[in-house]
Image (tube, rainbow, N blue to C red; front, side, top):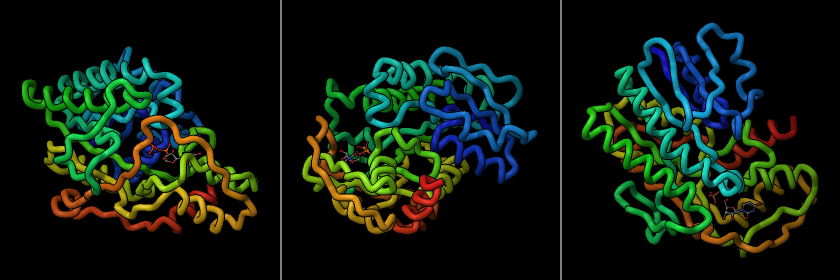
Length: 307
Ligand code: UDP
């Protein structure tokens, strides 16, 4: 089996590359290295079954030879990243997804779109099932990401319905683990580095907003199951254990034995108040559910950030 992973040098893409290699796949990783990092895949570079292509998928995506899977993960994913390059984010969701779908059609490969819980916006129902259509501000600061992914889902379904491409859509909820960039702005790398440096943890707003955090190895197993299924409907992948951001801050201080205090900062616009996946579909149809609890995952992540 040969798989192309766009965004293959990113946080999730690099873990997925490693996992597929361990399953005997040949992997082609394509990445523009805008938010991905060469150091994430350096250890894979000597592997005969691994190939890296430095390309911006919104401009060009050409791969020689056969492909069984096109796994489309390329996109900035952290709010401060996508708000710094909103136009590029929208173009990656649009042209990048088109280029990846065209390639999947040409190669007769299964296409998998890495979509996001952000398609649900600031949700009015909780937990969020795949049947929920979402509550997104189309002109807000997050819209460049949310609408790019919503467009990407629509494009994927159009290629499926009209061009017979064999497609999958996963909606990834907050995921964490080793290889997140310390400065990517997301809450776990931010709190972890602050706690390890005994600096104040910056809680935005009251800290009563919630998130549900999935450890990277659980997510990758879920992706593998969706790839190998025949589900064309979207599938939520995430850990349903829900925490307030304040609880998360307290846990990270405890786990790192830090002397950090908590400081409160203004809540960014359109910050979703709660997020929790309904993973009934993944559980019932794929037998998938997360196995790593938050404390275990945070400890692994801490060990990596320490290094
Ligand atoms: N957050 C925070 N302090 C930080 C970074 C983030 O309180 O230094 C909050 C943020 O406002 C949001 C939650 O943590 O409510 C998760 O933010 P993140 O950027 O990780 O992901 P999101 O789920 O918002 O895309």
